Image 1 (cartoon, rainbow, N blue to C red):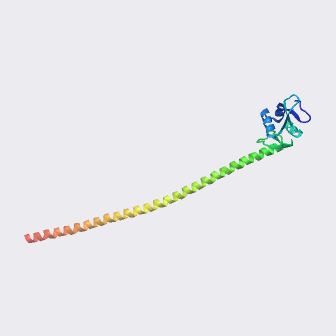
Image 2 (image 1 turned 45 degrees about the vertical axis):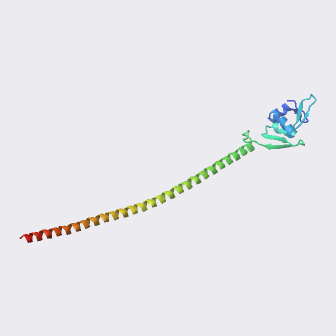
Image 3 (image 1 turned 90 degrees about the vertical axis):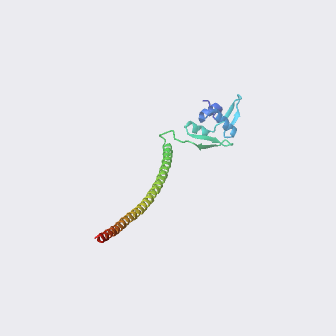
Length: 181
């Protein structure tokens, strides 16, 4: 790529160097992030400072941003490091995985706490239901005992009245026999 030693180059060359599209370079010129001009041939040129050119040539995953004075600021947006041999990249990737694992662990702990609370509430409901069932059983047994007592009392009374009635009949028959004799 023919590049000027002063940093001015065609939009296509700058886009290739910065690993962005030509429309992105033009948009950055419009937004003032990059400086642009019309070249000697009438084509638009863009100024890429030496610092950004070095970063781009080294394959940095940082997105260059220029202020209106042409000074380079670097906005690091790398989500995953591309060079596995780079200890800084490995460290960043490790930190990212630790954050993800930490987030997953927090979600798992939250879910476990929710399940524990639900199980505790279900256990309390079960204990309350058991207590109510015991009370119902006691009431049923008391009712059955009362009913059985009433049946026994009725039986005893019927026997008692039956015996009295049988005695009265026997006396009546005995008096009828005595009168008949």
